[in-house]
Length: 264
Image 1 (cartoon, one colour):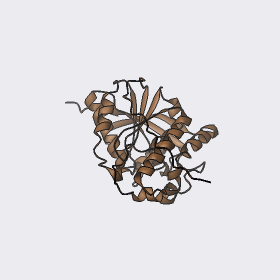
Image 2 (tube, one colour):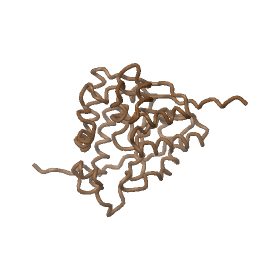
Image 3 (cartoon, one colour):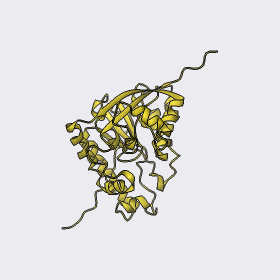
């Protein structure tokens, strides 16, 4: 049997006005939106696009990163081409559009330089709903969150909705209970991003989905599209994260409202 390399498919970078997106989900990397929101995505105002911030190809001659080696790749360009294909398959199953911005992933670029994301968001109508990651234990996720917050504020647009990054946030003790927010706020290891946001905004739950069996089956199929990354994710602290009772089974999204200024 001859092995084939996934075709170097190129996701669209079409400007946001065509079609007029109802909702845009900012995913730091290929897989974050699906891991975190597969059951929420069908509930969002459509049409929905998932925009991968670090979706660009590495520069020619870049050395393969440790993460990509663990995923079985020998070159960064092979990894990028495979992930574009995986992402298209997953998002196709969930019925949402795939858009990738040309920022290379962290090991291959400057992750704090997010000018393409800034410009892409500025081209959106102000009433487009935008979701951004909380940034739990993920520096690059937090950089993306802060860029989205800054751009929306500069536009005079409403703040983005904030979604819990899974599987990271999903390991919080009590995450799958009614006391999840209190548990996250008190968690010294996973609650830093939540506490940081809570100092600046009032967080109001917008979506809380405890996946039923049908939603779980759909999510599992979509997550399995990212096959190149599943083994390393399990080996590096996430264990059996595709278990039905694991960290992916509860998805949460919050609306942000700035705290009222103190009375003069």
